[in-house]
Each structure stands twice: as C-alpha cells, then as structure tokens.
Amino acid sequence: MTTMRTQRDDPLDDFSRRVVTVDGVSKTVYVAGAGPGVILMPEMPGISPDVARLARWIRDAGLCVYLPSLFGVDGAYPTAEAGEAVVRRACVSAEFRAFAGGGTSPVVAWLRGLARHAHEECGGPGVGAVGLCFTGNFALTMALEPAVIAPVVNHPSLPLDDPGGLEIGDEDAAALAGRVERDGLKVLAYRFDDDRWCTGRRFAAYRALLGEAFDGRVLPADVANRNPPPFFREVVGCAHSVVTAHLVDEHGHPTARARDEIIAFLTERLRG
Image 1: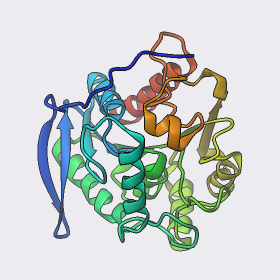
Image 2: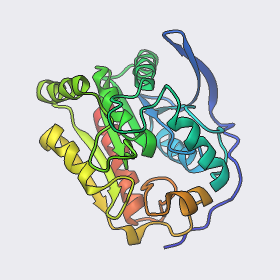
Image 3: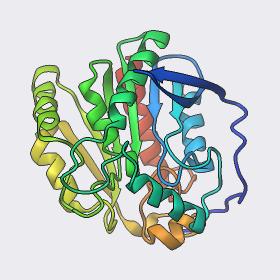
Image 4: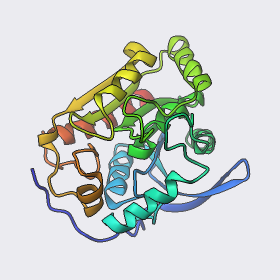
C-alpha cells in the first residue's frame, strides 16, 4: 500500500528545545505535551518527520514526550546518502555497540538519567520508553532504571551482524530477568515478518530472556507503506519501521492499529 508523504524537513517548532545534562554529558531534547513522561528515541537516520509525527501522537494522547537527539540532523527528511553517512558514524561511535559482543550501549546510561529527569518533572507512577530500529533495544535496557515501567521495543536492529542476538550485556540481561520476576514488567514489541534487520530469531531471543513478559507482535510485510522516504527504500530495503516510515495512517490499517496499541499500552501503565 502507498501513502503520500511531504518530502520536506520538519522544523519541530511545536516542541520545546532543551539541553539536558546527565553525569556531565549534555544532549538536546525536544519536549511536548503534559502528563506522565515518555522517552521516544529516534531511529536511523535521526529525528525524521515520521518520528516527530509519532511524538505528536503520543503528546496528543495526554502524555509528555521527550525526544532526545542522538544522531543525525534533527527534523531532516531521510535521504539515502545522508542517512548512510549517519549510520557509518554511529557504528564507530563510542556511545553505541552496533555489533555482536559489545554488550549494552553506553548511551543507555544517559537515557536512564533522562528517564529519571522526566519522572521528576512529570510525576506519575513512572515513565515509558519507546525505541525504534537502532535504538529499539534501548527501551528494554532502560528498564534497569526503576522509573521506566512501560518499555516498547520496535523492530530492534542491533547487533547488526547477529540476527539472533540481543544488544545487551550478560549482567544487564540477568538484572532485567530479575525485574520481570520481581516487578511484573511487561515489554511490548513489533516487527514485520520479513524484516532482515529484525528477524524472528531476534524475537525468539527476547522470548527466551523474558518469557511471557515479552509480547512480540508481527505484521505481514505486504501491509507496509510502499513509498517510504529514500533512506528506507534504498538503504533499509525491506518493510521495517512499523509505526514511522512504513506506517499507513488510515483507520483500521494494521500499522495504524499497532500505533494505537502502543499508545494504549503507554497510557494504561502511566495513567491507569
């Protein structure tokens, strides 16, 4: 299915632009809305117009969304050439562990601090964490921060060189399994069925780690938007981004239902 998209950058001018410092490291964060906090992490190649659109849907559901700038050009329309350059830089960055054997990415410590900051600002029982693609698994490892009570793992692509691997260190994996047992943590996840970046083997690894706490949902690839931005069409090369680049914003469409299920998961846990 094809959906029309505007091929222009997003000025993000309806967000409050802040600088948040955690343990001496400062990053730009775009904030919008009121209510319990949700950390929405960007996918490659950055805070695209589609990622910003998802942030606005979360905001409009009565939640306060925090959108950290982790890579790329904020608000940029995802072209193939620029996107490939962002991926190359991220893969060699000390903040990320893109390949098998690297363990949990160091940037997650900063994101846990952002979650604490959001919880202090917004109150409520805790905060949500939504990861996408390159940051997909970060939503899970952020749950080692007690304030994170609603993690959503969307089509996690790391580690890039191990389709059945998880981007998480052994110690963190054991701690997460303990939190599931102790706190009843639930994890919601999505992928397309023929996604070569997030395979069925990866979802099986999540289930092996988390058991019934892992709710992994799989959509058929033929429902994906067939006209995504150039980066997704030419570089990603398959149905991948369920609620951003490959979403079809039509009532009742499977990808739109996935978006609505994510927002319901967040609101139920954060607002009650």
